[in-house]
Image 1 (cartoon, rainbow, N blue to C red):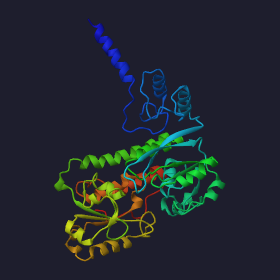
Image 2 (image 1 turned 60 degrees about the horizontal axis):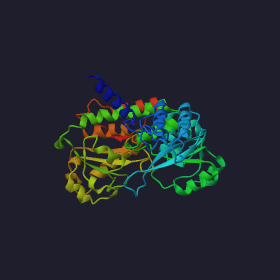
Image 3 (image 1 turned 45 degrees about the horizontal axis):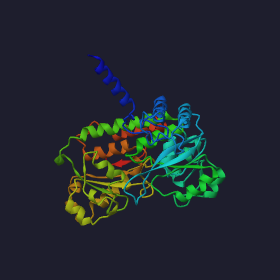
Image 4 (image 1 turned 90 degrees about the vertical axis):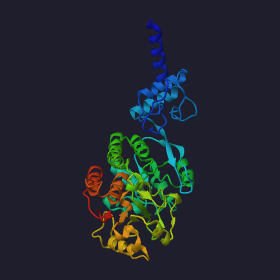
Amino acid sequence: MKKPTIVLLVLASILLNALPATAEFVLEIYGNANMDETIDQDDIEYVQGIINGVNDATDLADANYDGNINDLDIAQIDLIIKGEEKNITVIQNLKTSKEINITKTPATLNMPIKSIAALSGTYGPYMLCAIGDSDLIVAILSGAVERGEIRDIMKDKTIVGTSNDDWDMEKILELKPDLVLGYASFDLAEYRKILEPAGISLVQMNFNRPETYKSEVRTLGWILGKRDRAEELISFEDEHLNYITERTKDFKEEQKPKVYAETYRDNRYGGSSSSVGLAIEPCGGIDIFEDLGVSTDIDPEEVISQNPQVIIHMTAGNYMSDSGYDATNTSEMEKKIADIENRTGWDHIDAVKNGRVYVITSDAASIHPSIFHAYIAKCLHPEEFKDLDPVAVHQEWLQKFLGIEYKGVYAFPLP
């Protein structure tokens, strides 16, 4: 009588083993056949199951990215596990400012990577420093030298442009890096047409976007052989972001302050996908212009009518020299707050009446959204987050991942 039960259990086990693994998020590298968070022996077994007709094919099972799933993919996965692959194909999460959705596009990189042109503004070089591979950087854009936290590391790197519109391709080809690291938010197709025939790989990543942070950092850790360090960066984000969302997830609407998020320019909304726009909701606030979506000029009268309880003005070093790591005092931030409070009619706004106008630099966001969220949460809910010290969180990150002490002014005032 027990035999049917045993047979059913065996069949259930076979069926479960034939299904791809479910993961919090997928390591987006070809060879991750069972679509989990890593590449290991389980992926070899999964591909063998596909070949044998037991398992369903998955998007990442074609490890050598040749359009077929066969024994060559098993061989490629084995090489990836050992760190001996000659090339590797990863998923790029591309999204320009004109697009609503992320486009997942493969890019094949030559391995191993021994030199990198880190041309994604400050974020690429900053992440390479944090992950422990700054010595691989051979070229940067000029802005990376101006970033205080990594200035000393970047000062001797070759500058090959100022923005994504003026890469010095002749210089890049002369340097012949193994990899060019670019922004995922720009169309770099014309550069790719020049680089790839020259044997130079190009991969586009954004390390400043919370929605793709884990994927980008984990992928970078894999291709650079810095998997443990990548996991440390991800764990830091998870710990501190989860701390905030757990505290705010049950807030009632009446507990959430209305927030006007102003970008670097006066009377301009930063956009719901900006650093502060993405932080407001998980930090327990309401973005008064969320429905507008994109960054746009705002009629000051509309801000008055919306009557926000909190105003956050973003800044950066090119808008306010005394901000971020190099700031020596708060005078410029204080002046900006005074200017906002003195706008015509704004003395009637709750945020102004109650002294809840804040200036925060985008350097606080950068490649560590958890730090930025800590500053925002403290500004939105000073009582609920009495035990949260954003500066201490920031200091912990700088010491752990860059080996430097905290200094400067990233947000003012702090409740």
